[in-house]
Image 1 (tube, rainbow, N blue to C red):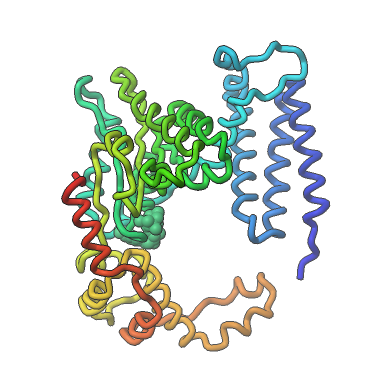
Image 2: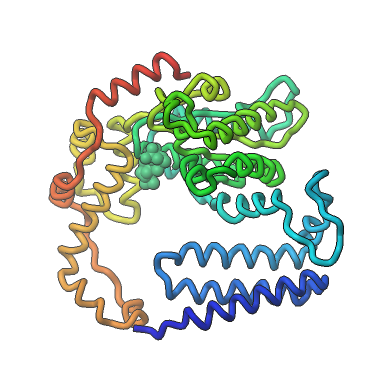
Amino acid sequence: MPVDLSGPLMSAFKKAKKEYEEAVKRGDMEVAKKKALECARILKQLSNYDEFNRESYLDKAKKWEALAKDIESGRFQKTRNKPMKEGSSRPENGKEEESEEEKFRAYVRNNLIAKSKVKWDDIGGLDEVKKLLMETVVIAALRRPESIQPWKGVLLFGPPGTGKTLLASAAAGSLNATFFNVKASNVLSKYFGESSKIISALYEVAREESPSIVFIDEADALTTKRSEEQSEASRRMLATLLTELDGFQDKKSDKLVLTLAATNTPWDLDEAVLSRFPRRIYVPLPDKKATKEIIRINTQGLDISKLDLDAIAEESVRRLYSGRDLKNLCQGAIWNMVREENPELHKLAELPFEELGKRSLRTRPLEMRDFEEAFKKIKSQLTRKDIERYEKWAEEFGG
Ligand SMILES: Nc1ncnc2c1ncn2[C@@H]1O[C@H](COP(=O)(O)OP(=O)(O)OP(=O)(O)O)[C@@H](O)[C@H]1O
Ligand SMILES: [Mg+2]
């Protein structure tokens, strides 16, 4: 067990952060940059001691590094000195307090921006959906007559695990757009009374960082249909969101801010929401061809020449597997192979980490029996009746 240094590291971080803030106040950007880098370094070390918050530490470290870069390029200064909106600025008297507006924008920048490396090729099937999203993204970037406008809002609906989040990430990844990943229910539960302010801040930052893709997951949480449960907070959040969506019909602006909303329960959405999303796209369970593609994507780097992919795909379709189920299926099969080839694997856990790095895992081509075993453990949550409900809604409201 390594010695836990998180306590002293945390104090070191607080100290560096304070020194950074003081340097900014003095306008000593050279020191500020140094301190920002120090903060990043300490956070990276901290990430080794807290596996649950590892990602979050690393994320924060990256932000400090980005900040240092901004300082170096002079961008930081520019954003700082930018005049604030009327009413939110305070007189310049030494101790400048962060305005409320800035607080929300900082929240958006620190928590809702996600990095996306997903590419279109990582998605199996869904050719029509991919095409539509690609077109939208391309139109937004091309020079064009004013009357031709890209879609501002696209609704993705379908059963869980069919690739809605993946599609949104691919759209952002391929365009190198800033990706805002917003779970409606999260914003509501964490920032209850202030969730509508977060939405305003979100779109403000999205415009600044355009091209942007704002992904609103679990859009049904915003609905007004389930009126008894509907809180005042979500009503206000929804109203703000709708205003923002309307506001974007500004023809002169060539900034792309595409809002993609996703839901598993489209029938819960009300008219107000639906009307802002004229494009509603059904993201169905994968068919046989798509299933084979998804299996290939999830077994990359392994030999699958011994598999009867047709048979696996047919069984998967019969069992109503989603893309997520298929991913789990492949992982299960891969694990079966790995365990069989490396029966003593768990014993290596006693070796020090550096020692492990010198050894490699034994593999062999995947076989049908690996999959047969894996099939037993994966059960789709869906019934035919569920699917029919999606299909019916798609027929009536989709398009
Ligand atoms: N069409 C697909 N191609 C490749 N992988 C897929 C596909 N669909 C799903 N997957 C796999 O399943 C995982 C979950 O997919 P994703 O998160 O996009 O589903 P979702 O539709 O957003 O589900 P939910 O409605 O539960 O949020 C993905 O990370 C990916 O590994
Ligand atoms: Mg999702």
